[in-house]
Length: 229
Image (cartoon, rainbow, N blue to C red; front, side):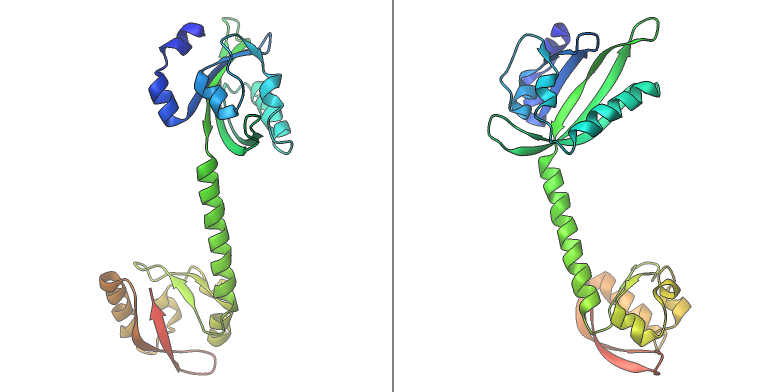
């Protein structure tokens, strides 16, 4: 393993934020590159070190699944194992997200003898995913709380992806009667030509609000000021 680690390009490894490691499964001792120690916030070592040093910094909620998942992979005869988990770096106390990918190396008899792979810091990706989730939650709350009928429709097919409670109430239909069906299927627009006009303007302008639409509903046709985009 020292030779393989030495052949890794340090600059590329550091730029990509990838730590490389190799574990002897018989001794549970690991060797790793400098970037690995930087990612983990551990003191660097040129000598093999016990894997318990890494296990100790894993988040308590994630630590069991990392070990159990690897054991299950071995039991099922799978050589490739991937997992995402959190650590608390000893160097600065930061909580970071790590993506680990490793491959089991077997001897001539098929017995697992080594486990080699990479760890990548994916904290920024996880933060972006969390911000997106929070944004979607805020939109969903606003979407369903407004008293004005609103819907989400695919531009090309005119297929309903969602409709808020006010829209469902105005239409007199249940959600399952709307979602997945098209504007043409449901015939909401009093003038069928309106759907084509809206699609063309969205394609060319992206957003507009100077068009009133007359929609059929359970109480007959009603005209609404509308915002499209």
